[in-house]
Length: 166
Image (cartoon, rainbow, N blue to C red; front, side, top):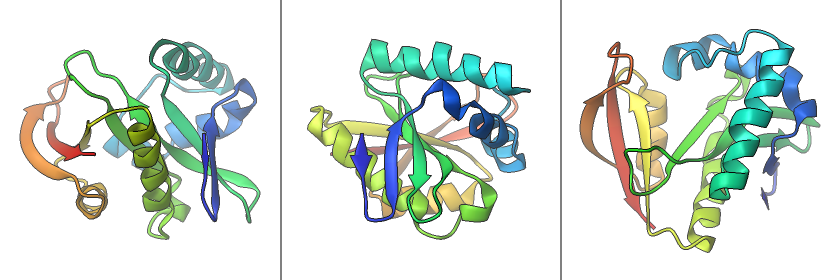
């Protein structure tokens, strides 16, 4: 998809399953994003194949693997999601905890913003739960503005909705 000075951002492949299992079961993923039903490597293969690869085919985008070139390893995900209730994609990102706060999420998100522009999108959304100030701060630095709140689908949290014109 894109490359930056430190990162390669590419589509997920089934061989990424061990990393996806680790990320989607990490404490911060569970706290800020929620359980996606990935408990083992077989579930991670399902998530890659039937969710993300299906999104690539259906929408031309999805979540992409963030691969740190100097470390020679994956460190997170960043990309676009299409929600049934939105008229434009929303941007999402998540890193393993040990890579947070080092500028990786911003670097990957800026590449995804460039990708969205190249696809002709004029607006993007992003969501965080109310108690996720780190992601909210990054969205502000990326030019997103908090526009409203809405309940999460499970009713357990309040989502903060952000928007950005491209």
